[in-house]
Structure formats: structure tokens, C-alpha cells
Image (cartoon, rainbow, N blue to C red; front, side, top):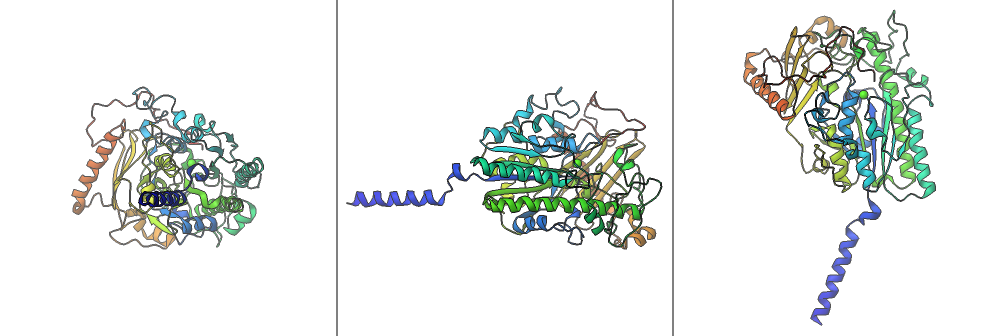
Length: 517
Ligand SMILES: [Ca+2]
């Protein structure tokens, strides 16, 4: 008798356990990975409550999920910053270990056939239905073509057919097909947009909303309009010194801006950017509504991010080829099962952590070649950060280029460009100077334009003897990170470590047209 009742208890316990644990095969979560092209986190209300951008659907994702404050991309060795960034997202590998990194394959820093270990390959093998829509080009073609369903086109126009609505339609179409065919495989949808990357041709209604026009007259600035977004707080009419990439397309040739940095041009271009970003938000809303109607929304992890940030007038820069926070950082919002609504975390994550995270959230084994770290413990509120030190590079222009390192509130940026003609160091306390103000932001003429008067300590602290020890500590951290990540260059004040710069590194040219997309 005793034995029987023990068995009965055991059976009921087993039953209870099987009810409590999700039946993995039937309920594997879906993934909706949303990637926009060129967007600063500071454009979004989730990061900058003062932003006039109307993005109710992205705001709702933030309210129902987690906002990551410290999301970064490792950087680029090319003016086309999109390209390495998208390789890192797809493969989980760090910047100098990518198949396209200068010298990486020759030095054995990247395994062959890496595309077989990227997001679509991994999730196809795991039994997911994979679908992608995104821009074409400046991406990772070998990986892109592994999605089972692929609907790519570069759409940056101001109509439904030529703009972001086209990408939204492709996802809606795919979801409708799944309904029709009664597809039971969970999905991984890579929902990419071609905007707000220039040309930022918004729809007429949204351009009007932000007081902007699709300005095409290079000979003059567009008109100022009260509805245009205000100048960014760290606006400058010019960067204080050369960024080291002469003729860089994004800094001299973007239609509507060119080399102009006057307030009317910058405010109009921000209006265009916001018109494009709001259109993206509308498309996200349509897809979320459809997922809800299908009963799939609650079992879907939704990740919203960008391939890198963007300057548009901040620090007198226009493009994505710098390491200030507005450009080095990316927005990152994640919603899904087990993530506390309205939560925030510092995270200290890189875009290369996406693959490992998606694998962890779906109990799929990450590929051996993965170097990213799952941020699941952060998303579950168990951990604040996945790393303490962050490294960034931009050296698509003259070498060795720019480098940054960040730890806690402290950030160092170094510039070693134009054959030694520019050697600059910036040290910021980001908690005290989140806008990375430099002495030019204290100029009364700039203050008159932005309406922002920086405090006396809100400045580059690299030359301040009170911070000499901190500067030394950050310099050492940067060198350690460069060594750890196999950065093939060294800066003027670092040991050369016996390195020879990669043979295939492009030489600085007078007029480069890199970074087209
Ligand atoms: Ca981009």
C-alpha cells in the first residue's frame, strides 16, 4: 500500500512538472529581429525623452520590454560601416576576426565558410523557418542568401512602393503565407529597412509633420521651419579637427547636406530622418498587429536595433564614421517571454552578441565560431552587464585611424590620422558629460545656436592634470583591448608590438568615395 501511494505521488508530481514546463517542440519562441539602417539612439524617446520623433510602436516595445542603455558596435575598417556591422550581427565574430577584416583570413583569424555558422544557417538547422527582407548591398551576401525566404531591395523613396512600407508588406505577405500553409515551424524573421539611411526621402505627409523638404538644391540651404527638430545639444558648425578620411562620401556628398552644416540644413535633414523613422515605426506597428491577430505575439522575442548610430550635425559631423556616443552606440530594445516590462539595463553589449542571445533565448546551440556573449542574463534581470570594457574602431580612412575605449563612466577617444598630422586625445566622463562636449561647445556663438550652455567641467579632460592618472589608466586599457582583439595597428604613443600593417589595407587617397551605403 505504502509503495502504491508513493507511486501515485510520483506520477502526480511528474504530471505537474510536465504541465509547468513548456512543451519545447510545440512552443519554441519565434524571433522578430528588426534592424534599421543608420539611427542614433538619441533619436528615440526611449533614450531621449525630449526627442520630437513620434514612434508609438517602438515606444510600446520599450514599455513592454527592456531598453539597453549600453549597446555598441565594435566598429569598422571601411567607410561602409554597415558592412562589418552586419557581418558581426550575422556571425557573432569580433571586428578583426571577420572574413572581410584586413589580413584576417591570411592570419587564420577567421575560419573558412563562416556563412555556414551565421544566423540563417544556424536557425535553418535548428528547424526554424527563416525569412528576410532588408536593403541590398553593404551587407553579408553569403549569409543573406541562406534565408529560406528572401525579399531584399534597397528602398529609400517617399512612396509606399519605394520606401519602408515595401519592407513591411513583405513581412505581412510572409505571415499570411504561413497562415495559409498552416506552417508549424517557429519563425525567425529578419525585418530590415533601407531607411533612415540617406537619401532620406520621407513621405509627403510625414515630411510636412517635421517641417522638412527633400532638399535637392546644392547651391543653397533649405528654409527653416518651426516644426523642424531643434539642433542636437552637441551640434557644432564644424568638427574641431580633421576626422582623417578626406573626401568621405558621408561627410561631403549626402544629398540635402553635402558639406553644409548650417542650422537650417541640419534641422531639415533631421526632419527628413525623423519622417523616415516614423514611417518605419508605422510598419513595425502593422507587423505587430498582424502577429497579435495570429496569436503569435506573446510567443515572439522582438529585438529592435540599428547597424550603428549617426551624427547629423552632432560634433559638426554628418556621417557614421566616428566614435562619439551618438554614432558608436545603437538603440537596443528587446521584448519577449520572461523580460520584465518597462525594464532597463546598462548591458555593455555589442551587436556581435545578437547571435548568441538569439540562440540562448531559443535553446539552440551557438556555432563554434561564435565569439559573442548571450545577454539573456541581462534580459532576465539577473545581471547588469555582460562585460566591463568596450572597444571601438573607425579606420576606413587614413591609418591607423580612430580608437575608443570605455569603462564605467570614463571614455577615451584617440585620433591618429593623416600621416601623423592629426594626433588627438579626448577623455570624457560620460556620466557628467553625456553629450561629449568639447571646448568649441562653449563658444558663445554655438551656445546662441543650440541654446545650451555646457557647465565648466563638461569638456574634454585629456589635458587636465587632475585626470592624468585616469588618462593613463584608459590608455593602458585601450592598448590591452587592441592586443586582445587582434587590432593590426598601433597608435603613435603605443609600442609597435612588431606589427606590420595589413598589406591589403587601402592607402589614403585624396578623394575617396567610400561608404556609399
Ligand atoms: Ca548603416
